[in-house]
Structures are given as structure tokens and as C-alpha cells.
Amino acid sequence: MSNKKNYYSFEDPSGTTVEYRATSLQQAMVIKKKIASELGMDKEEFALTNISNKRSEASDNTEE
Image (cartoon, rainbow, N blue to C red; front, side):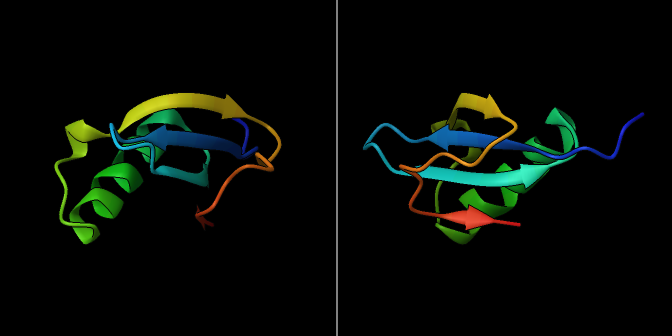
């Protein structure tokens, strides 16, 4: 398996976008759960909106 990281973007219903790098979708979901917990939200409130090998220019938040 490759160690190549992709950018995963998640968005909540209010339009807040969180983007970060992960090596797999499974790792991205674990990070999403952690970020949602830190924000005091349920992880299910964030929906996957994009997977890319480049960072989105519209991203406000990035975890690496």
C-alpha cells in the first residue's frame, strides 16, 4: 500500500468545511471523529464532500 496522502474535505450542514490529509479513507474517518468531538458536534453531522491529491484553495481549516 502506498503512503501517498490525499486531502479529505468534510462539510457540516451549516457549511463549515474541514479539510485535512490522510493516507486512507479509514484514517480520514478517525480524524473526522476526533475533529467533530473537539468542535462539540456529532461525527455524523459532517459529510464527505471531496477527496483530492491537492489542497482546496477554498479550505479554511487544515489538519496535517
